[in-house]
Image 1 (cartoon, one colour):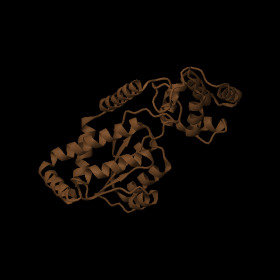
Image 2: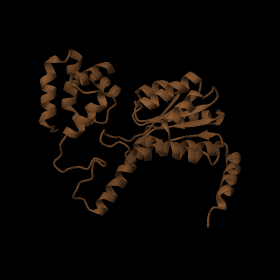
Image 3: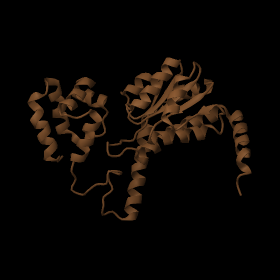
Image 4: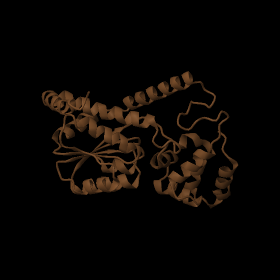
Amino acid sequence: MKMSCELINKIGAHYKAFTKTEKKVADYIMENPREVLYLSISDLAERCGVGDTTVFRFCRTLDLGGYQEFKMNLAQSISSEANIIASAKSIRLQDTVPEVCSKLLTMEQEVLQATHQMLKAEDISKAVGMLEKASRICFFGFGASGVTALAAKNRFLRVIPYVFYEQDSHTQSMAAALMKPGELAVFITYSGTTKDMLDVAKSCRRAGASSICITRYTKSPITELADVILLCGANEGPMQGGAMATMISQLYLVDILYTEYYRRNFERCVENRRLAVESISGKLL
């Protein structure tokens, strides 16, 4: 794997200043640069046999603000002979329209398959049980994951009247702080490390609400705050924030929860869906 001389020189220039454990991080990154793009800080630390703080300290030694800034620099430094477009790893600038269509289809099928392979029936069953028992369900998500959260709210609103989602981050923070025992929070976050989401998750826990988390990584700050974790299979690099494949994998998990909830509560869902459809039927031409 080729990387720009600037990054290689920067790591090399600081190598002697690294601690013994930081050198493990440097060595792993130099040997596996493309793989690192898709690892959380906890995943990289585990691969290197060190703690999260060691990886963070390694980044600070390189005069970077943190791990995400390091991955951004790494992504910009990795070179390719064919100018691969960042939004789809296999799509090249010289591809035809049919080739782009075919490659996107293949990529998104792979994402769904990867998500399916990580599903655990017991986790789905537990999550649906929490949906059934909740007196109110609040969806939380920011940025691109907020789009998924909004779609989830709209999906469940057809059969459950007590669901909530607001796009504004301040409104989400207030809603989290005012949650109560017996209510359910559903966190949707790719990385599980964004400050806004972690603040919301901590507020929900303090309030005594139960929680489900849809995320990419088993080990991340958000997973320590959730009761049930559902993993999506999309790999999203630092230059691919909001990738469509990520939302597709998240929506697949939302659809599984919705469908299983509907199946378990069939009669009530059928009636609620009928009322919902009737309410908007007059708005159609």
